[in-house]
Length: 132
Image 1 (spheres, rainbow, N blue to C red):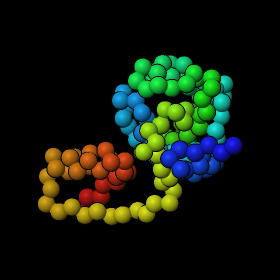
Image 2 (tube, helix red, strand yellow; image 1 turned 60 degrees about the vertical axis):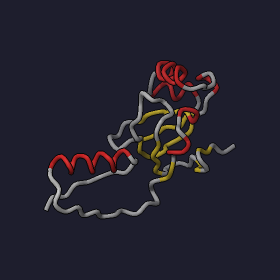
Image 3 (tube, rainbow, N blue to C red; image 1 turned 180 degrees about the vertical axis):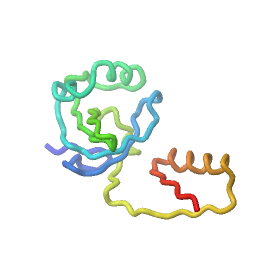
Image 4 (cartoon, rainbow, N blue to C red; image 1 turned 45 degrees about the vertical axis):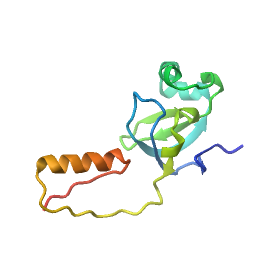
């Protein structure tokens, strides 16, 4: 049986980004899927019961031992497990088939630059700043 989120199959080595359903963790997670696993393997990489108790307070989820997890290799090299049920489906998507864009913004000060970068990151995009 294939596991999918938002129509995207959790195949090995695909690059994805997503947010969690928890209001306590609103960051955008990005990385490469390196496997789908059960509770025991996921628990090796993180204290699943602690994370699950936080998720359980906010959203209705199944018992942790009955969930399907995927392992995400993040840019910093860390491997983090996520339950499929923890993911905000509307934010889940592949990133390995996107195009890089260059955006040039003229006549902005430091505060404006910070606001622009924050807005772009909040939308789930990665930003690299090159100052000329």
